[in-house]
Amino acid sequence: MQLSLPIAASAIVCGLLFGSFAILANMISFIMIGKINERVPEKERISYFWWGTEVRKRFKSLYPDSKLTRFLDLCVVLMMVCFLILLRAWVFS
Image: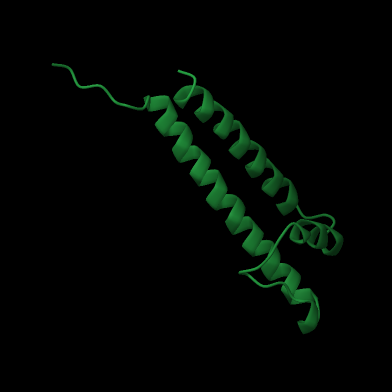
């Protein structure tokens, strides 16, 4: 009797890449929050626990030449591509 995986190996790899890009995007967001909090007054600081989509806009206005926003966008796009490949490999196989 030959053992078979219930999930394809490509789905496992895509799932791991998806998680890696998600963690990397979250870490980049934390770096951006730290840099924002260095420059703004205490009343306008962003919490590390409760933040939303305003982080990217505020960071871009404070640091217009920084490449962190492009790197964050790249991580999000790659995460979505991995999700679509994972969906194809796992659900529609």
